[in-house]
Structure formats: structure tokens, C-alpha cells
Amino acid sequence: MSYEDVQKVWMSGRLVDFADARIHAFAHVLHYGSAMFEGARVYKTRQGSAAFRIDEHIKRMYDSCKVYRMEIPYSREQFRDAIFETVRANNFDECYIRPLVYRGVGALGVNPFRSPVEVLIAVWRWGKYLGDEALDQGVDVCVSSWNRMAPNTFPAMAKATGNYLNSALIKMEAIVNGYTEGIALDNAGRISEGSGENIFLVYGGKLLTPPLSGTILPGITRDSVMTLARDAGYTVVEQQIAREMLYLADEIFFTGTAVELTPIRSVDRITVGTGKRGPVTERLQKDFFALLKGEAEDRYGWLTPVPVEARV
Ligand code: PMP
Image (cartoon, rainbow, N blue to C red; front, side, top):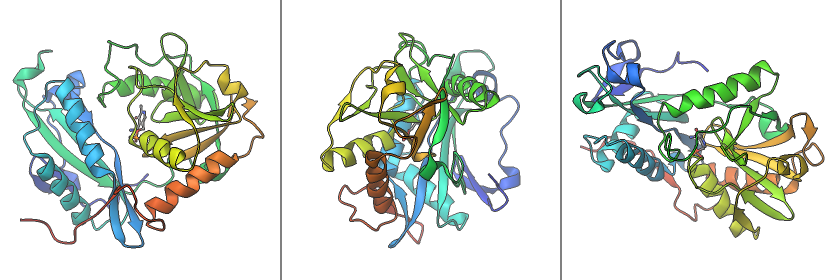
């Protein structure tokens, strides 16, 4: 990952140079993790640059903030305009988008209400999150010894920065043990999600994924893949999934804005299926990428062209 070609960052209403995009040492967010964020992407399509499901990402950002009683001082429309303005200011035809809503400088007690809500939008080029070969070859993962946060502790439906301390524990453990990624179980020992991605299994001729019952992020890629899979005639079931199904599934893959749709070829050194990307995974990848690149018709209205001129 390189930030060399990042020129501008949007900070509370204006574009500033990369070098000036700073947060004060007294900002509440730094001390108490009081921030919500998003991760979206702009793709280079045949019809020009377009953001993928940007309104759903913006909605999830507003939802996260609602849970944490943070009022975003902009309308959703202004938020979207600011995102596109930032993409354009950096001249990126393809990039990752990171809006962050955080508590700034006010009062450094736990009570967040006395620190103002600020917004920044950063964009950068982000290639293949789990390595260049991951999309074809799949990745080797482990079941983490760390559980995902239990329901009614840290709300999993909110994409809060603090949740990612749990993700970091999962990710670090996986890396030091020689795996690419870790899969967390929930506090009842059922499959939850990866450190930054949702998970699907092909098992018994169906596509299974854990439900939105309190321990996973409601992934926008997850939702997209469920839609594409149903359209392709697969049966998709949201259900609780036992750990051992990871060892018995015919195919497993991760979904997420960063990983897109990445096959898993082994779990805890047990080969998944044949050890190669399976036919369901391949079909869904094909449908997903065709849509992202503008090669297939945008039949769900998931692509929003990056406007050429800023709206005034
Ligand atoms: N789970 C977690 C914990 C994540 O961080 C992400 C990435 N935002 C996802 C799932 C996938 O969500 P999405 O498809 O919306 O990127």
C-alpha cells in the first residue's frame, strides 16, 4: 500500500494537502476510539469511473453513527458529493474510499457528548488486499482463538473503529502462525466472520452464511453476493454454522470491499474441497467482477458514475 499519489484529504468541509491532514492530540477519538467509518471502492468501468453501492455505504455510515449517538453535520447528499469531490481532487480513476466520522477536541472524559463530531474522507489506491494470487488460488486461513465480540457488547452492526481491536487480534494471530487470515467464532462457538470480511460456505448443495444476529458486520458485498447467487439459481441460507462445517464444506470464500470475493483453500491446514477454487465460487466471482467492470448490465443500479464536475 502506498500513499505517494494521494494529494488531498477532505477534512470537515475542505480539501487539505496530504501532509496537512492531521488530528489533534486532544481529540477524543484518539483516546477512546470514538469513530465510525466506511470502506467503499471506485472501479474503472467501461463507462468510466463508478462507485460501487455508494449509497448503501453512506447509509451504513449514518446507521453506525445513529447507534453511537453521533450526529453527522452533513446531509447524505452532501456526504456523497464530498466523497466524489475527494476522488476527483486526487485524479483517481480507481480507488478505495475511507470516510471517517470521529469525535474531535472537546473534553477528554469518557463522555463523548462534549467533543464535536468531525468528518474526514481519505482515498487511496488499494490493490489486492490478500495478495495478487488470492482471487485465483485462494488463501490459507485458521480459526482464531479470539472470538468475535458477543451480542450486546460492541454492536457489530456499527462499523466502529474500536471493533477493529478485536479484528487486529484475529489478524495478528493468523499472521504470526503463518496464515493469511483468521476466522472468528462467536461466543457460542459458531462461525462469525473474518477480521475484515464476511464468509460463505458451499455445503450440502447450498450457499450458507451466518445471519445478522449480532456478531457480524452487515457486509454490502455479502448482500451483493447473496443477490447474485439467488439470481444464478443457488439456494442461499442465512443460518448458524458449526465450526466443523469449515472442514467439511465443498467451497468457502470471503466477501468484502477489500477482499472482494476471495476463495479459501484451507482452514487449519485442512484442505477445503479439492483445494482449488470451486465452481460456485468461480461463477459468483465472474458475475461479480463483470458487474463491477461494467461488462454486465448494471441490473441492480449498484454503480454510480463519479461525476466529472463538482456540483455547486
Ligand atoms: N466484516 C468486517 C468485520 C469488515 O470489516 C468488513 C469490511 N467492511 C466486512 C465484514 C465486509 O463488509 P463490506 O462487504 O461492506 O465491505
